[in-house]
Image (cartoon, rainbow, N blue to C red; front, side, top):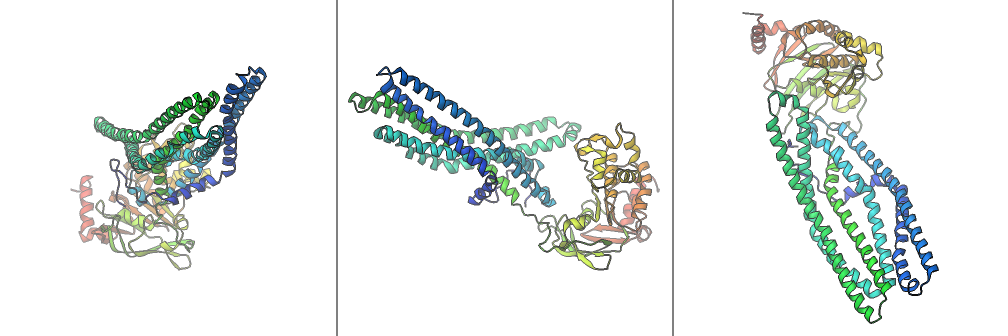
Length: 600
């Protein structure tokens, strides 16, 4: 997939079809009993309300002319009873549908989040986080109401229309025919407007997504923005996106409101024609005054459901764009997943083989080509080389964060049997790998919770032991609440070095067969790093490890150092062997040593 930015509109990769509606009904069908009850209550309240114009007709044609106070009193009591019943039924229905709406939101978000958890790194590499968040939060909120109340209201308004037509024709056939004569005109206008309205709301969805993407990016990078005094530039970008969002919204609303305007205009025309005809015929004693009043109320009641249906249609079209985005995300292929007959990976020895591996993040651009690497159990491998050469790619492929273009990676179990990592389950693979990436992510919660993330059933003593081994216990103990100190998302209360130590403790706690350290000590001061090396060496003993480091002094004791360049391994050997070659590693090491003042 092509990479997307905050200022680039997303193209809809799968246009809407009836299959989306069927999928939406899956979430609705779970609550069909409650929704049927709500529909029944609403229908009873609506049908009861249709007797109000009849009461008006009886009062004006019989009770008032005959001065029948008893009948007038009975009609007043009946009128109040109908109103009270409608209020009670409406309140109960509203409570039921509020619960159903929240349940639909929960179900969609649960499925959406579960799918997002399974998507590969390549999905998140290709789009801003804000564009993902807006789908989970804003779009789900928007579609939940149309999937619950929208459907109930649509059915209810159709039922209302049927009963209103029956009541109108039972009152006066000629006037009833005049009332419904404007309906074909309104239907033709809706049909004409439909494609333009959907396109306008899709555009608004794109602009809103862009705005949210930049907002999330700006909040996440606020420190850098302030450091480089980019507030004015950021503000101008935000204003440009906000203006585009507003313009798209206004255009979409303008088109949507034309539906309401047309409905109201036709209603008023029908009112005028019906009253004119009624008054004319009343002079000839064809209709009574009570009939005209009753039909006047029925006209409003007839066109009110039409207007409501138009508004529901508006909302439905508006939310189609959101529903399309939600299902587009759910349909995003999980390209890195367990195969149908994937086996569970037994306990491994740590022996690793890269066999003729070729891989690229983007089609046609390879980072590694015909890459071969064979690692013995317990061997420590250091990966060095220029930025972007593929060091992190090697360990990412071992963890199967991405699928290979070609070749294979195999691991060996304790019985000597080899397993292709693409043929085993991801959980059984990654449970035996301890990974510390360059980004030391800290979750919101306590420090103890963050370390326990490496092994959820770890005891407090095991957590403290891991922290002591990586020299994190010293600074944790000095904090006000020690291991129970609460940290925010990304660990804003911790320094970069402290975050790396916590992440290091988390990795060690998992007690992996293969340990992967990707720039694990890049943000740790030299003094702490020297102490940390003692713990690292103890941990690396009899354990296969892959270590990526720009500080070459930290990998001098590794069994093998690989210089990655030109899509493969340029040099391989121990520290002393590579220095003796006077090649690329020698140049890198001596340049770094001069910078540190270690050599002349």
